Structures are given as C-alpha cells and as structure tokens.
Length: 184
Picture: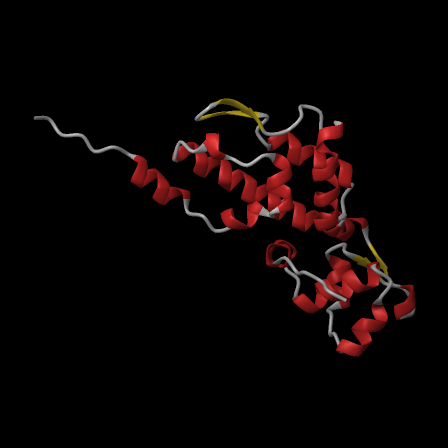
C-alpha cells in the first residue's frame, strides 16, 4: 500500500508520521498493516485533538470527521475549484487561445476530469498541492509575461505540469523582470 504523507498536515495538527499513518490506515480499514509496521501513535493526544474517538478495544477506534476533511474531499468540488482557477483563455502570439471550456462539467473537459480524478481521487492534500502549484505558475507567468504560453487544461493535467512550479521562486522573477533604465 502506498501512502503519501503531507508534512504540512503533520505541522498543522502537531502530529507525528506514526499518528498520521495510524489514522489513515484505520480509516482505510487496513489497520492490520499498522500492526505489521509496529506504529506507535499517541492515541490520547489524537483524541484530545479531535482526530479519533477511542473505543474499549483498538478495533472500536474510529476516525473523526476532522481527520477525514484532511485526507478526503468531494472530487467534484475539487475539480470545480481547479477549473475555476485555471485560465479560460489567453492572448498568445497568434491571437486568442482557449485553454478550457467555461463549464467544469462540459464534454470537452471530461478527459481532463478523468485524468485528474485518477491522480487525486478524494485526497484533499494532493488537490491542495496542485492548487498551490497552479497559483505559483500563474504568478510566475504574469511576472514573466508568459501567460500566453500556458498549456491547455488537458495537456496540463495529463503531463502533471504543476510539478514544475512546486518550488519556483517568484521573488527572483520579480527582481529579474524589473527594468533598469538609464538617462543618456
């Protein structure tokens, strides 16, 4: 089983990787894997933080809604958020270019939607990561006047283009793009 752990979630809730993995496996009904891994979660702390409800036996422990909102979300809501932030059209070198359909559920967006669902599923942390990268790309492209070269939504999703903009430093782009003029 492959489980991605977003360190931002660990910091936000003040939990350890063992805590997160225990909660995740419990939610996925795969807590037997946790026994094989010899996880040592701090159950009392998790209950105090409202992430778990402890039962009399470990088999009666239940994950609370607060944790579920971290790892799961309604896919359609995530898809709509992505489409609403993704540019509709840009002015390219050869004129106006459409990057996506206006309606998130339009037929022309369906291939992109399926590919994005395959990547994200119901994992809100993955979606939040993609949204952060999209916002970085948009800021970078505006600063460097390269918005006209942005990929269409389907290409962007299929190629996981957001990964290129994970750690981009937009402050450097701002410094480079500022013009230096001299008086003659």
